[in-house]
Amino acid sequence: MTRGLFIVIEGLDRTGKSTQCAQLLNHFSVSGTNAALIKFPDRTTSIGQMINSYLQSKTDINDNAIHLLFSANRWEMSQNITDTLNQGTTIIADRYAYSGVAYSVAKGLDYTYCKYPDRGLPMPDKVFFLDLPPQLAQQREDYGDERYESLDMQTRVREAFMKLLIDNQYIHKIDVTGQSIDSVHDTLKQQLEPLLTQQQQPIKHTLFM
Ligand code: TMP
Ligand code: MG
Image (tube, rainbow, N blue to C red; front, side, top):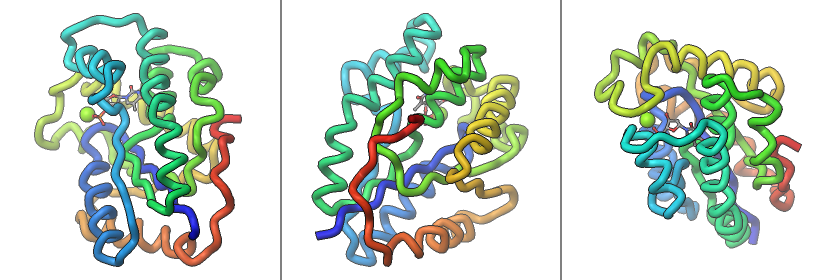
């Protein structure tokens, strides 16, 4: 049995990540591929609940501490990710460590420091960055509900993502400006096509190494 693919979708808030993840999941299930959706932060765990209350501005947490909690929230899921992939199930992740770095850097934390806690996490097979100007994301429904959803912050998050894209050339940027849900979905499918037919190497734990 071949292992599943580990696909990550990244982007600013309100850029359509969750919609695209759901579309991909549907695409895989229709085509008979075992697939599962995961989302970071995973707000269901006890660490996730702390993160959730922070994002809803119900609690304040030191910037370094919350950075480590976001990373811990990935580590607590990491064995599960590896096992699921090895059992042949493809994983679609709505955000991953790239968000972890970009949002903390946007708050002023050091870039190299920010990558460190996530070093050695399971390495994705494909990472997409859905790119939408922060001004356009701002016009979308429900914008501004949570901490970080301000134009100023999102502009800095995008700048941090641009640095990540330069340093991690495997991240594939997709400009979603003016594109329909279906056309973005088609682009993602096209990009994934070559991976579906090629034999996968064992999962690497080389993220940010
Ligand atoms: P969500 O809107 O996708 O649920 O993500 C919640 C917020 O948390 C979003 O503004 C991005 C931010 N975030 C971080 O700051 N660090 C992280 O590691 C992750 C995964 C998300
Ligand atoms: Mg959000």
